[in-house]
View 1 (cartoon, helix red, strand yellow):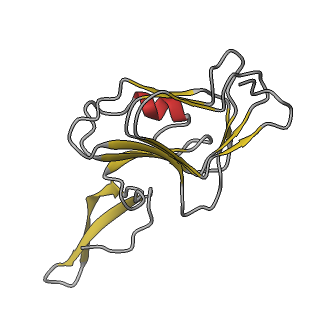
View 2: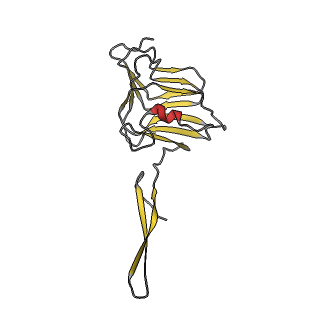
View 3: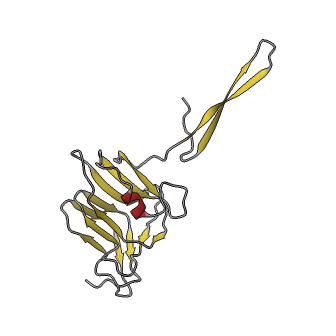
Length: 173
């Protein structure tokens, strides 16, 4: 067992031995890429980072790739404080087994708050038409005219520490 390996890093392993004449013989044993640890309470999920190097560069891309059905608490962790110019639509997610949910959140280990700025013609930064969805640690700043910052039409949607910032009066409802 090898412990304390850096997350999201490819580690290469070699095995060495000495022959009867004390000559070293090394063989490449292979490589493995360590995974990033999801926050507590997340059984599975994806990591989003706009600059790349993670599972997805957009939040919607991660939502679109969710497995059907969800098999437990599933998280989409945003691993930066970047501004995402997209509308995130959560709809028709199969919650599968009891206790399944989807949480979209800022990486709690970073202390950064990613921003979603919905493009022109959007309904909201987050359009949630699915039950058992959580939004945590995010900001919405609209530079385009949109009716809502967050629009939720389903039961069991939790929104916590989500800042709706609208200094220009672009959110109309």
